[in-house]
Image (cartoon, rainbow, N blue to C red; front, side):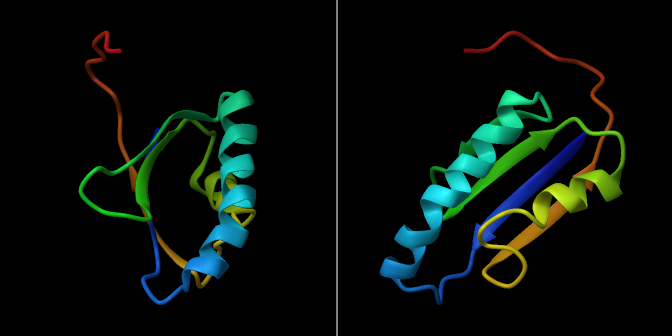
Length: 92
């Protein structure tokens, strides 16, 4: 599994961000529907930033998915961390 922190660059003006955000949201929805993104959400303490937990076969597959994002490659920062879940609780 992978944890991805996505932070949209602060230098994007509001109009440009608004124009790109609907494509960004559709991208999230597509990969959520396929089961490759299992958790998606914005940070509450920072605007234009959030987290994704992805279940994919390889880092290369994840990087190919990230290249489809509307903000990729230079309008956002993508921090990728691979992890092995050891304990998963119920939450809602």
